[in-house]
Image (cartoon, rainbow, N blue to C red; front, side, top):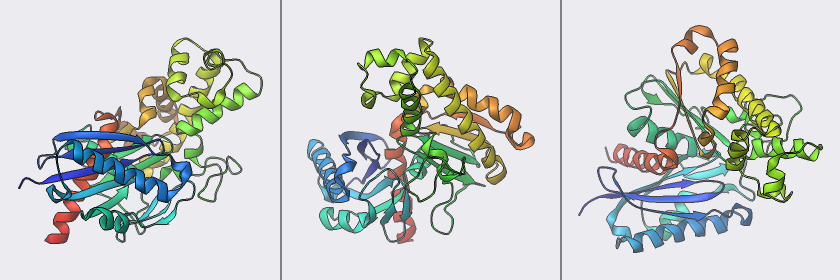
Length: 325
């Protein structure tokens, strides 16, 4: 029987599930809204339903699946399969994801940080292929990051290596659910940039977006910011510039910490491309450690939002093989 692998990318907005063959060619994919505000039990059922519906569509059973990998945001106990904390997921602490999924599906399941599974995807099949020192940042609902150093994905003592989203940028800034405040991810993420934009409008500034949404700022999206930027909207231009510059200051630290040869920018906000990253590069040009920065290129991810699903499946296969060795 041919081996198949499932890759799950759990995001703050969507659950993305794909099935791959043993050459990691995708044979099917399904997406569902995460509905994080209903808590962990609800989200787990939504993941399960998305997986079973996809298997039904592909005429596969759980017996056809060798193993499953899941990318989960936040702090994890990877060895025990527990999601300990996720800053953008309410009612979500010490969630036994692996045990729950294995009990319901009977498929060997492995979890890893969502940014790290994106890294696995881009490192093995995308923009980081054949590179030995890679930093992947994901600009999605939150800000995630993961690194390959000297040809190995690094984890650290608690699997938290690469969590640059919690670098403190302001001593007294926006509160973060990690318990601190002023964290980079509170500003440089989809939630962060939208909050920055809303604050400017609430202070009396006018943007063309206000007309698009009839002053309902709760429905503004990052895509709208890109469109308004292209139309020369001053408030949006200022918002994106501030966000891009702050990302640059945050990334200055990584050249000392990880010395990457390539930084890959993924996640939904990466679609802003140079609208955002030109300001990031301006800061790095003048503030980053010169020699390591000159040896590094910054690119957007080439696999798009499929990297997490693919990387989760690859990660699961490697963990499964290592466990059977």
